[in-house]
Length: 300
Image (cartoon, rainbow, N blue to C red; front, side):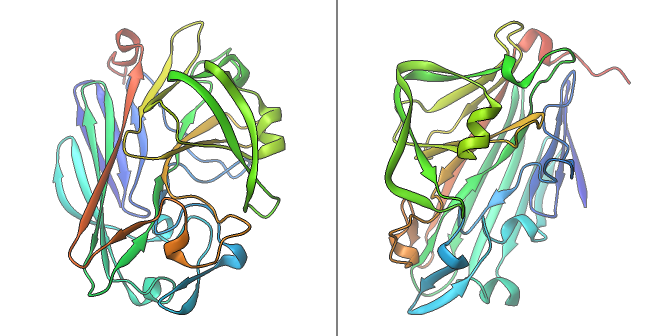
């Protein structure tokens, strides 16, 4: 089911399947619409894992469980539990299907809120069971890139809020992280040009422990783009398919398995462990740039 949101000149669409915000329009569409030629995804919620597991297996409570890449939330039907003209709260609870993969009673609420200058998405995870509950969570928002006709993907760049000495973690061909292996991308700088060849070679750029709590995807010629604020998330990743007209900006609390991981869920890097009855909330915010262009009403 689609749910329409509006605030001023901005409109958005949320989808109960996957709990995603799948459209954001000011003077144009900002979120990738999905295309099987490249990737049918748009803005999946990554829960209760981020990335892949070794042999799609994780150990919890002394038993092995099997789960596909990025978990099951992105293919689950959420229920609207609160809604206004410019926001919606979608909830996912455990089911026989989720318990077969992840034996934890839980509540995951995703609140999509239109703002005057963009939107925010808040994840609230609650342990509704009687035992400690580990989880990871992340976003995977795909933004159209380029946003304007006549411009190219490689005309855009990423600009971090602070100067960074940034080393990307490296994946093996199975999507598992290689412990101790990294590649330097920034040495005291803030700007990272976009290049399909990098993604063809590495698949995903994955950073952790950066000083920056935000990053801008922009066309330096026009200033057109988006700023992502991801305070509270210890990792940020970027992904596309070579030749595809989008870039995913991905704040993560957790990541793919490392090749030397024990296999226990509680040993996963940046895993959150909630006591019974405890909840944790994380929010990322997207600001459209530049404001004078982005918020012109859409001509019908």
